[in-house]
Image 1 (cartoon, rainbow, N blue to C red):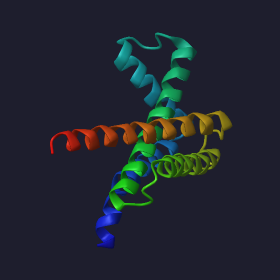
Image 2 (image 1 turned 180 degrees about the vertical axis):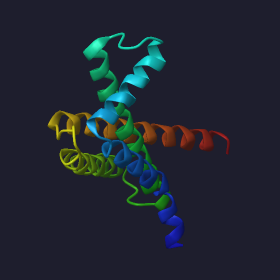
Image 3 (image 1 turned 90 degrees about the vertical axis):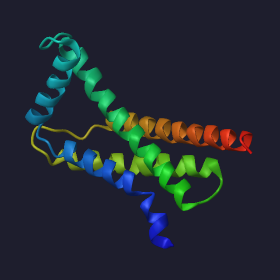
Length: 149
């Protein structure tokens, strides 16, 4: 029974591994990846210059942590952890924030990367957004389920 509860956290663990992988890339590797995203989206190299690079990088931070916040919320809902929705939202966001701090500390030791407080703020906002999004998805499914009874 306990193993079944832990299975709900597998998506969060996978997302954490993906975040760790991206954070372990050197500054040059990370730049190549960001530039590749810009080229794929715009069809040209270096279309928007530095501003577009910043937008792509910060959006990646937000979206990674939105996925993590949603996955942690999902895991807590799956496991039946604390039925109070507000507490689940807070815990999902707090966990995302703690992982963001550890992620930035990790980047400090990676060549060409830096530890930036603003990235932690963006990550926390992403985790909160993801948790709220997952809360709303569950609320919608709960209402649809009640209407079908």
